[in-house]
Image 1 (cartoon, rainbow, N blue to C red):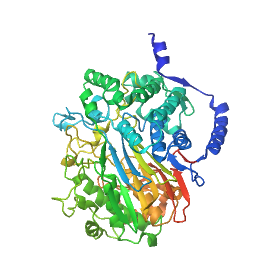
Image 2 (cartoon, one colour):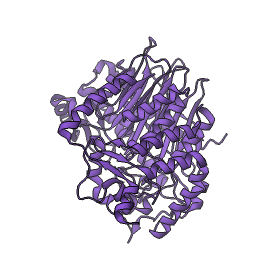
Image 3 (cartoon, rainbow, N blue to C red):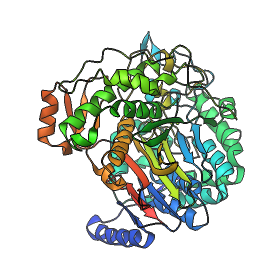
Length: 583
């Protein structure tokens, strides 16, 4: 096949004259959003349910699932599949996910679809001459873990959904086939990763078109190979992905390019139902994701610490609030580095989420001065009470709820933008680079600057530590908030702040997500704050001894909620181009 014909069969782009077409596109988009009940803020009360994602096309897919008779689980699955098309630099079926569910019958469920290390992975996988080589864990064949998102979506569909999975896959396949218009965030990620994508011919053909310039916002990307793979999954289910053609193709590519992933690794993958992390905060129940996510543990740990301070009296947006929250984050992230890992391989203390331990940590916080946290703490029962597996996770988050009482918080990821940058030839499916979430060496930071210890070392079939924090908040046994975020370790801080704004400051999802954010992850000892905190607050934080870095924005969160009066609401993060929808 000639190169031109080969290129045309893989991907087609359409470029528009921006001066003429973009105004029409904006008018059309406004009309579309209005007709579909989509907005970036809070939609009206639902007949059936609510959806919030980072992309209007994905939100509409979730709403269509509700219209077709599906529940919030079906809506979440539809969102995930469509995000793998229109937000594919962040998530997709070549990556993993964590899903937290509250079902209409009151059951609380967490599904671990985190990637798994190949059987041939060893603790020195990324060491060269005794030192960790970050390029090996971030791009290419060795960076890939066995993906778990499709297995998780299929499990949720079979056990908790109503609509056939094949129907939802076909709807997403049509989006891939017909194409979608790129937003500025997608184009920005293409610019940032262009040189890495160009190293892999299949990725270059799909995402860069082999041309010297990247596409522009408003261009249309069609992905016929991805559409074909979705349809093969609709016909062959998880067998096609984990024990059939896709597993075989991936293994062949890995063998030819120095990887260690095999078809047997795919065949051994399993979704793991786990026991949720559960805590309380000012009369509310917090339900979040357990290890191998650090997110749920540390959201609850930080809330336990902050319960000892009158945050409402400090005032939202105050330097006092920012200082105390940052100090609590610092203590929790020190514990993350020391204690957190895959509970099937490491002893992760349950005492991290105990109220007793929180008292000890809260007493270490000075209200007038930033403290130095030299090392992790030692939670109670650290030698014998652990999180364990229950048999009877750049990123994206989406939240759904229905009026029957089903609520879903799901966070999915390829890790960094475009993951490993590897597309399995002929499939259109990008593979993750979540092997970088392991500790290549104790104390050596990963892409996000996070350090880890022995608990998160590389081992065969182990799942790397994550920050993903899909969380539900309940009051009197009824869910009032589904929330989560994207953005590496800032996922934990974003989720935490959304909960604080909801409970302590009585904010709606829209208001909670729009409020200023901050983040401290212990090492490096640097407090990141959004510029919207204001110069006076930033100056006061520096006066108290914080090393402050000012950012334009931190992360992207999505949420749906219901207040004490029974009013429903939902919001997509105003920092992005997402949408909240109602039907």
